[in-house]
Amino acid sequence: MPADLVAELAAAGVVTGGALALVVVPGNGLAVAVPSHTGAPWLRTRQTTEPTLVLRAIETALAPRWVFWNNLTPAALLNQGLRVGRCWDLAAVHRLLFGGWASDPGRLWAALRGLDERSMPAHGQLDLLGPAGDSDGDPENPVQPDGHLRPEWIAGGWSSKPERWARWAEMAATAFRWQASAVGAVGGGGADKATTRGSDSATTVSADPARLAATCRSESAAELLCAELSQDGLPIDRARAEELIASFIGPRPADEAAAQENRRRRDAAVLAHVPGLDLDLRSPAQVKAMLARIGIEVPNTRSWRLEVFRDAHPVVEALLRWRKDERMATTYGYDWLDRHVQPDGRLRGTWTSCDGGAGRMTASAGLHSLPADLRDAVRAEPGYRFVRADLGQIEPRVLAAVSADRGLAAATADDDLYAPVATRLAVTRPTAKVAVLAAMYGQTSGAAGEALKNLERAYPVAMRYLVQANEAGRAGRPLRTYGGRLLPMWPDPVGLAEAELRGQLAGRGRYARNAVVQGAAAELFKAWAATVRTRCADLDARIVLCLHDELLVHVPEPQAARTAELLAECLTEAGRRWTGGDAVRFVADIAVIERWSQAKA
Image (cartoon, rainbow, N blue to C red; front, side):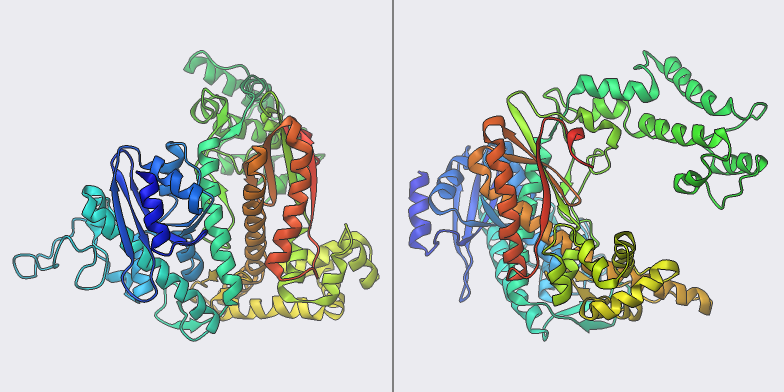
């Protein structure tokens, strides 16, 4: 009975919120392991056709911090109707500690053991030169004699029988203990060897251990959120979506011939301005040659380059409109609608909590790049509303926090941070904004360069923080974000002329100075989203979209006003917890809306 296991866990010392490693075999059973800092984990296996009944009882009684290998486990639980409150996601923590995206159990285990990833065995690999027989030890042991996890276990062999479930849960509990120890080691700066990608050299970098531990928890919560976003989906008004798509590319074609006719009609609207030319608009080279014939010389045909020539010739305006229509036809047309919007009216894609760089959340199925023209189709379901919240001027506010620049922190007290900065620099607000953004993105020429000189005098601590990141990046030294995410630097390029090499190193420096700010902003955003996820659950409010610095929450209409208040409260709470105080103020534009298009741009 579920109550028996709950009682056993309590007797084993699991307290409310305590760590509990879990592996689940849907329809067959589960295994749990209580991590131990002194010996082997405490283990239990339960065979049952309905493991979620057991897990729901544990969740209700103890609300543990479930330890998962990755978010496939909470996704499987969601499929069975179970949402858990908190977790420690081993894959997410691995990405924090060691950088990058790859975080399968084999790579994770090797990193914690200090093993060379290049010696990891592949599934099905045969030791043709080794002695006959079982040269790799006991196949019932998930760890090979060389210390690596067995590839057949990683590939799913752990689920073949209950004895293996228990060992796999034990491995997860052990990995958790090692990761928790590594968090402290990283903070101490003496045990964290971060190998620069593509190089055999290693550089020691450090991070605040308490803050890194908090980031581990919020990043893990973001993995739970990603599993929920992937399952719940974004509400879509299909009829409105069809209308919007038709306004760009024409009515839904009945067959391929009709689709070709729509395509020909879109092309004709451009070609009418250059009669006599047989031109393929999908060929950049041919478009560039066409523009040259009418006196418009451009190095490439990207839309942003053509914008300044809108008034030079009618074909430019027509071409820019064609680009928009073509993108809608090829990326967000009827095929996209049919593939990704399910019969229940939800747009679903796969969500990930880290892009592999600075750590931003990403999604497939166009969820992260949905054109503004389609936002009117994103509509709350009947009886519901969206609460939309967008962080304001988040990067300069984060810079104030991570650099501990008191002057810049004082500017965050204003709703419009750029106003007090402009006053201090004795420049206009637009110039102040350009200066701050240029500092974070590494632009030093033109008007930005002049403004930067004043910025360096006014906010020397913040500017020094960015300069130091830039210098580390140029030198190829790895960095850590404010929250502790490792940012490996790529190795020096070889075989380049001196001028080209300088350009490459400068680019690496610009990446580093921006990544320490964007990465920290991503950490704050996820801490905020995790807080919202927890605090708004009792209102039946669910996050349905995370877009850069923006949250979209789907909530019953009677609870919308309270949810809006909670989002603001959660931002204050997350910001205080993330920075350790109130020196920096974070703000968000929050509104209750029916359609996403009603939000202020």
